[in-house]
Image (cartoon, rainbow, N blue to C red; front, side, top):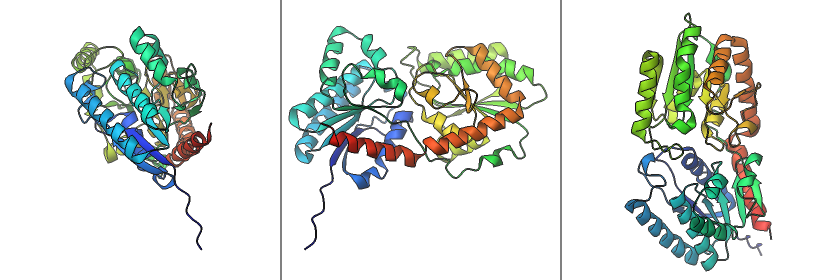
Length: 385
C-alpha cells in the first residue's frame, strides 16, 4: 500500500506584474515563475494595473474601482481556497496602503491564514510617521495582525519592528546575466559607457547624474564618453514632481551645460536590449535618495559594472564601498562627479571593481539564491507559532 502524499501548504499570492516596469513588479514576476510553484500549492490574485507610472498611489476612480474589485476577489478566494498563507507586497503611499490593510483585515476576518507582508522599498516607517492620525490608526491596527514581514536587508528591519515579532531578510536576486563572461567587455573598447538605469525621477538621482556630465567630459577631452539614460518619465511621489516637470528640468540642465550631445535617452529598455546595454556599460550610476534594494544594481553587478550609489535602504549591504563600487550621499553631485572621474581615469581600478562586483553577485544575488531564500522563509513562517 502506497504512502499517502503529504499535502502541500497553500499560498495565495497577491501580486502585480509588468507593465509598468519597476523593481517590485519584476521581482513579483520572478517569484511567481519559480520553483516556489513546485514546493507549495500556489494560487494568484493578479492586482496588476497596466497603466503607466503616473497612476501609482493616486486617489482616482480607476484605482478605487480596482481596489474594491480586488477586495471582492480575495474574499471569494479565501473562502474557496482556504490558504495557509496570504502573501502580499505592502505599499508605501496612503491610498495603496489602505487597500493593503483592508486585504490584511479581510484575510484575518474570513480565514485562518498567516499573513506575510513583503516590503520591496525602504521607507514604510517614514511614510507611516508622516501620515494622518486616522490612517495611522487603521494601518497600525492591521499590522499588529500580520504574522511575518519580509524586508530586503538588515538595515530595513526597523520598518516593522513596532508591530511584527517575526521579520525576515531576503535580498533581491536575478539570473539575467548568469552566463556572461565579464572579461569580454573590455576587448576592443574605444569608448566609456556610463549608464543610469531606473525610472527618470528626481528622487532616484537622475538629475544629479545630468549635472555631473559636463565636468566628466571636460576632464577627459581625449576619451569618448557617453552617458546613457534608460527608463521612463513618471510621477515622482517623493519629490512631488510630475513627469513633465522632471523632463523640463532635465532639458534645462543639458542646455545650460551644453551637454546634449553627450547624453543618450533610451526610453524604457527591457529584455535583450537591457542585457546588451549592461554588457556595454563601464560604470553604473544610481545615486538614489529613496530606494530599498534596486534590481538594477544587482543586474549591473551581474554585468561586472562598478556601481556608484547611496547608502539608502539596503544598498550599502550590497555595494561595498571601494570594493564593488562607491557609496556617496544622496544629492552630493560633487562627490558623484569625483567618483565618476576617478573610475574613468583609472582603467585598472575600474576592472578590479568590475571583477569584485561580478563575484559578489555570483555569491549572493542570483535568482537561485533568491528563490531558495524565499522558500526557506515561507517554510519558517509556516512553522512559527
